[in-house]
Image 1 (cartoon, helix red, strand yellow):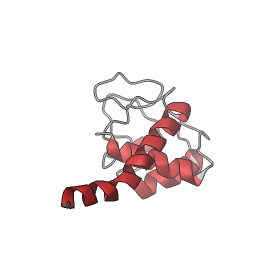
Image 2 (image 1 turned 30 degrees about the vertical axis):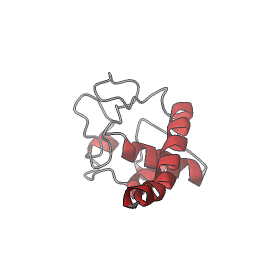
Image 3 (image 1 turned 180 degrees about the vertical axis):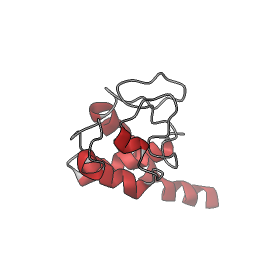
Image 4 (image 1 turned 90 degrees about the horizontal axis):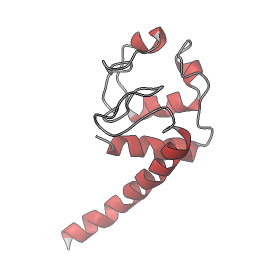
Length: 116
């Protein structure tokens, strides 16, 4: 019974992660991979990005704006970044590639939290 209750409590997060995967595939996957060990693309691989230092994937050549960020990715930072990457980190090479819908940003953040 307890396991069933825990599963029901986890379902909203699972649904958001699934929605986030769809948004990611439509808006982000042309530049970013999320499979651990996949080669870098135009953007860094985002497997395990949550908790990683911003600009911290050693296999990717970041813009100086991200290399000098001095913080780690967490949900709040990622949500702000997805609003307007250039505003958050002027000079980032990602430019104005944003997600204008708050629900899409939240779904992508949940998805990336689930990708280890």
